[in-house]
Length: 365
Ligand code: ADE
Ligand code: ZN
Ligand code: ZN
Image 1 (cartoon, rainbow, N blue to C red):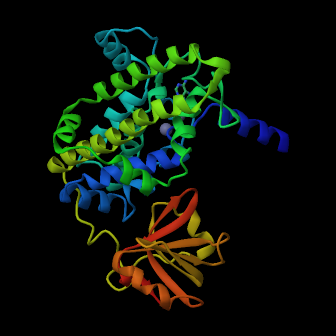
Image 2 (image 1 turned 135 degrees about the vertical axis):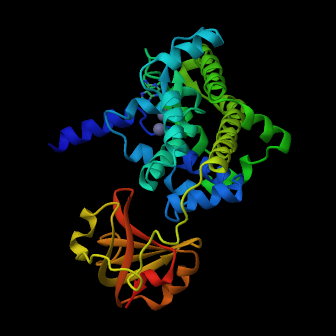
Image 3 (image 1 turned 60 degrees about the horizontal axis):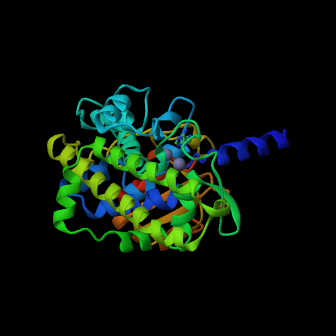
């Protein structure tokens, strides 16, 4: 059994199922946040219950399944004219382009619930990234470069993984540092990029991947050297910056038209409304539900913009993580070792249950 799990893990990682990787997707989220209008920022904050675009940027990879796996890329033959490329991907089976447009329609629909619109937003943030990764608009026969073996930094890798993560992570910078470095566009560039339709985003990736395939054929010993890295890093920077700026453009346009109902009444607090109390041991079974649960605090960690509080056991065995945001962060020093109750909506973050607290009234002792 253990062996099977190891093989499955190897196969899954060999197929490069993680797109830009966490760092790349977070960087795109951070860049987008800097270009949001106040209206879009407020709508995002309500839908994501206080989480940031960077926080949720890899949610779609963490929740990939057989049905949604094809939504992360598009495979097409090389050599198509723009018109043929456009008609092929519009009419192909579900893919990153059609999934992106489909989720935009859901997010724009004020008749949908906030939960449905939040899921659509998480997909859009992720797919805006994937569609800008050149190797996600690529050939079927080599699985988007996954089966093209290469050597880089003294290790075996493949063309897909090189572009998802390996080159981006080479410098060892975190998402915040990359966002600071990449977010350099002039107002004129921003206006132009945000005016390009999504088919252009995909077409640009296709033209780049066409060039990448050709270059690999001429490579000595299938080894990626520093010359290759230096030549291609600006392309990665440009793709990630464009993805962030264009993502903001989509969200700004969308939330200028279809508003999201304000959050003030969204989280009932213990004082204002009766909410069900759920035992802490069962909290994790109530995903996306709003309720009250109580338990002992086993310490906290301050991350600046948020404070994580461990309930029920110490990290990493906590039964629930309470995420203090905004003003609620000031509670952090009064909670350790105390029995507290928290009221809010339970969500899963990286598979672990958490409740985001924006308002001190959500916590009682
Ligand atoms: N990721 C996983 N499979 C892929 C494929 N066939 N093309 C591009 N990206 C992928
Ligand atoms: Zn990928
Ligand atoms: Zn993806």
